[in-house]
Image (cartoon, rainbow over all chains, first blue to last red; front, side):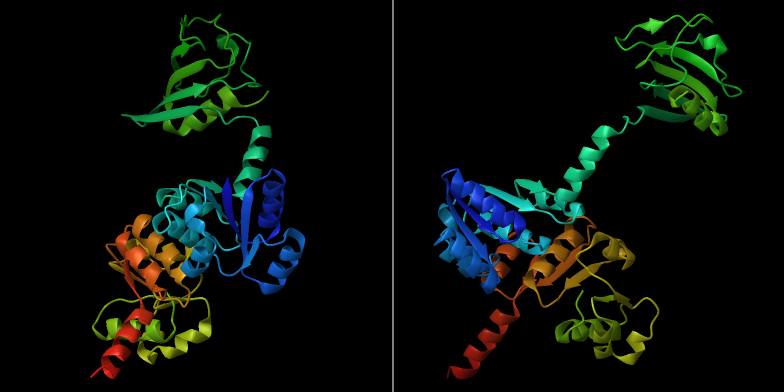
Length: 220
Length: 130
């Protein structure tokens, strides 16, 4: 495969090294002459000094025959401009951009960048994996200042296991039905015990909705 | 966005025609290119990076009829203009793209892109040809 990488920062540098080691044909474009010289010393003739968002530089790089184009500069606007150019002027099939600001991901994809990689987002997603899942929740306002609340009982909720009759619900709250994980309706009597992933459908006063959700999702 | 020579000229003309104008620039001192009346108008100037959604929002781009990106860098103009068009749905978006190849590409992609390089070269060619 022929891959063109723009931006010889940490990501571009390591990427070039890994791609070369994997036996691919790579061209690294770096704007800064000092950096480009250092990298040429390291990698040889696969480094081109120039601004990778300039059409003439991309032309010189022979980007038109590239299979993949990867923009890794520190500037999101240059990464976007370069990806748009190689796609629309040089017909490169696959473009990948680093987004330093995650707010740019959606726009870049909308504008035809095939893949956006945002380190901020990756780290956030990793952190979220370790956090307990957010409770599944839907609410609808009902006449008379009431809310119809759909709550899924999350793992670790304090209400799990004890008979419903013993759970202290906020005033004016009525359970309408409880649906088990496999879609069965549970009989609503005092003996009913809530299980993890049960969906509780209840009617309550708007002021009490928050308290009800806390009862059903809060830890012991 | 961009209060250089072109940005300040366009902003003051629009303002003199009676339009409500907000000028965005990264540097406070660039606003001294604007006429005093405009500079002293509340909300007429904002220091910030126009390629960021938050800054565009504060500038009121979601309410704007026109967005003009005339920073010195093509890539910044293209990014800001495309945000104005696709995220804030501004009806008319114009951007300055110096490089003629990129100018043509962005025009084909639906932006109104103006190339000072192209326009100046055309004028010079006209002036030297008999």
